[in-house]
Every structure is written in structure tokens, then in C-alpha cells.
Length: 364
Image (cartoon, rainbow, N blue to C red; front, side, top):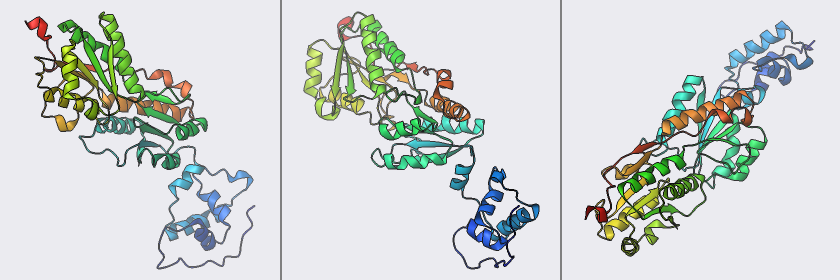
């Protein structure tokens, strides 16, 4: 039985700032802080101690009189779940601008979370600062990560601790981390097949020089596509497309018989921007002299340009699929094997456009 302390209640403090604390509730109720914690716990089980109804009533009355509100972070430590899903973006500011490429993902994330009865808490940080910020995501029941380059060591620690983690975008380098991604391989193969069907015999893939899986998938689809068409494989990797994709380089390719180029979409769309600039600088007509295709969607600031041939990434569907997978992990207490097979790669939609046509030789 909880030993009753002498009443000795203190009046509710006046002129205070900040939220009331459990220690103040304990003083006002004339009990220990441990007793207050047991009474106000979201899942009180007494932990072997019996709290009398009179003591419980005094604690609840003191909490009400002080306006005490439990700290959500503290409740998260005591409760099994709080129906919060985190979304962490490795950007300096959270992408809420409708023109940002991540925004459609967030639309799908928000809708699916609401449908499943979860609220969202948003986290952000640059790739360098984000590593130190990852500890904050434990305030949520699980977290969805967005970003082309992520801190592997910190994510690995979360996964090893059993914290539910889903990456939006296929990731396989971290064992046990679930991810949801688009089928870039099949979508790229379809774009290459379209160009081959128009009669192009020399096609070059332009991509950035990194090891992101999204880039690797597009390259795999390109290589499979040209092989299926019986064409030579030409992949041009560059760390700086604006510097390396010069008009002279484009003219040389054209002289060698290259009649079509495909570029990958990334956060910056650097390969596509560099390719467009070089084609224009070389004085080549599109699609009269060369055909151009984009493996993804063009950046919003190029909306006035002709819509390029390529494919559209179903970003809202991917966001919804990621939330479903994350919610499943939360329900299964982080066991990625229990839910990973439920979310296959999401198909992209082929997009015809005026930037591709038959090669110049077939017109003549």
C-alpha cells in the first residue's frame, strides 16, 4: 500500500513559465514523483505496487489544477506506440513546395497515413547534419526516409536496434532495411525499345557519376534494352555534366553516327540540363538531327520546354506504398521480413513526346 505522506500541499504556483512538471504534481498531491508517474502512465500496471483510489484521485486533481500535460517524448518511452510516423528528408528544408520533385511523394504519404489512422511528424536536415539528427526520429513509431544519398552507418544502427525504417527509393546495400521503389529497369527498357523501333542504331545514355541504385537501375535497363535490340552499348558517366557535355562533344558523337541520347533524372537533373545545353550549343535540331529522351520527369523550371519522351514516376503511389510498408513494420515490431514482400516495385508509365523521331538517315 502506498504510504500516505503528510498533506502539506503547496498552492499552485503563479506567474510560472513553461509546462508543469511531475515533481510539482507530486508536491501538490503530497506523494512521491514515482507515484505520480505510475498514476499518469498511459499504460499503468502498478509495477507491483498498489495505488489507492484516494491517492490516485489526489494525483489526478493536482495534475488538473496545475494544467499538467504529459510530455509526448516521455510518453513515447512508456507507451508501446503513439500512432506517429516520421518522415525524414535529407534536404536543408522540408520539400513542401508543390514544384519540388519530392512533393508528390508527400501527397501520397499524407493520404495513406490518414487512411491508416497515423499522424505524421516531419524531420529534415542536410546530408551532413542529418546524421546527428537521426536520433530524433525515435519520437515516432517508425520513420520513412527520402533522399538519394543517406548516412549508412546511422541508418544501419536504427535497423539493428529494431526500429521500423523504410526508405522511399530502392536500397539494398543495408541488410534488413525495407524500401519501396519504382521499376526503373523495365521503364528504361521500354524507352530504349521505343527509340530502336524508330530506327536509331546508336544511342548514348548520359548519367551522373555516382553509385545511387536509381542510377544503376536505369543503366541496367538501358544495357538490357540495347542488347535486346542488337545495338551497341554506350554509357557516358560524368561528375559534372555542364562542364563535360560540350557542343564539341555532341558534334563528335553525331559525326560518329549517334542519333539518340537518353539522360537520367536526378534531384538536380544535371545530366538532362547539360544535354539540352550541349545540343543547342552544337546547333543540332531535336528531333530532326538527334532524338532526346528523359528517364523520369523534367524539372519544374523547364515546364515551358516540350515535354520529353520518357516515363513518369508514380510518386504519389510510391509514397502511399512506403507508408503501408512502414505501418506493417510497426505492427510487426520492426520485422522487415514479415512485410517486405508485400510491396513489389511500382511500374512507371511510358510518356511519348515530341523530342523523339526517326533518325536523319531514315528521313533521307
